[in-house]
Amino acid sequence: MLHAKRIHLPSQKYELTEDGRALTAFSLRGGHIGARFTLRGADYLVRTHRFSGVHELLDADGTVVAATDRVRRSWNMTCSGRVIPFRQTVAAGREYTMIGDAGEPAGTIRRTGHVHSEAAADLPGLELVLQVFALVVVLLRRRRKQAAAAVRSASLAGG
Image 1 (tube, rainbow, N blue to C red):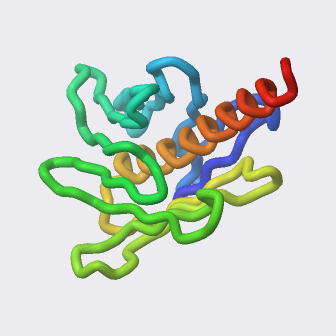
Image 2 (image 1 turned 90 degrees about the vertical axis):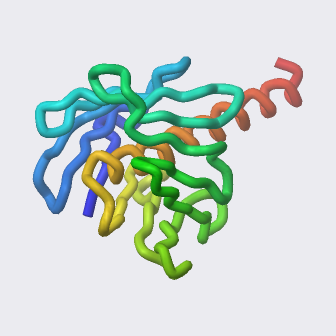
Image 3 (image 1 turned 135 degrees about the horizontal axis):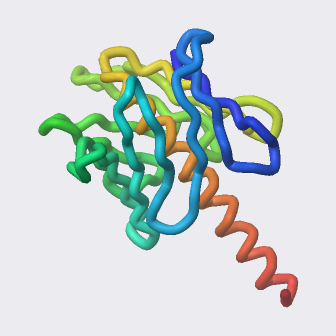
């Protein structure tokens, strides 16, 4: 099981562990770069397409390893010709369930912790890098929704 915990609450930097062992750290960033991380000696980039809501996982050579369609309540991750569906199963995007080949729940990604500063992913059957990608995508979606809410709030307040 993967566990991401925000290192310092006001920042967007996370430490990622697998079953208690440190794996990597990453920061959620704005613009087209969603996050960068190194896993088992290989560098990866999560690229965000701001207006479409699509995310891509690129390796060090810039090759797309996996991609999502628009991340909403239901979304799909495509990798190596395989489509992996995810569905929101708890309100406010606090939990997404990975749907297996038979249409049954096959794993979960859940935001936890104080002010949702942590997240856990239990996605058996997926390569580790794809598990990390799915977890980062859920965290980026949450950050995007928070930013949109802040903009709406400021415009309604006249600021």
